[in-house]
Image (cartoon, rainbow, N blue to C red; front, side, top):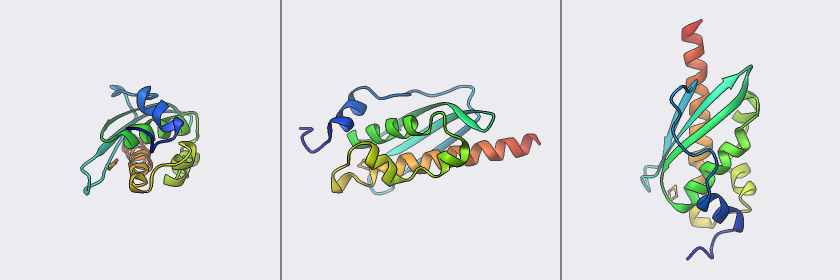
Length: 128
Ligand code: FES
């Protein structure tokens, strides 16, 4: 059933990292794919411009769960500027590839992460 996926994808699907919602988040971002209906929410906690904690909740397919998990692994400990540079391709590469028809699943991770950082910056500017 999973033969189309790399070992990394299977690992992150079976044991996702940083899964769950976060109550005291500093930024929260959601990104969905209207074609398949899958949706990801990422929560971040930021200290001294660094993503010190991150978690996610996803409603989606095997690849989206693995890609969401990998996105959090790539972003944790990064500065906001570094995290904003994480691309869909970075996520795909870190997963040792995704099948052609599942490449779009990596969009969720990159999109939700960017939206969470945007939300953090907006929240921060409101606080002055
Ligand atoms: Fe759409 Fe995976 S099938 S995110």
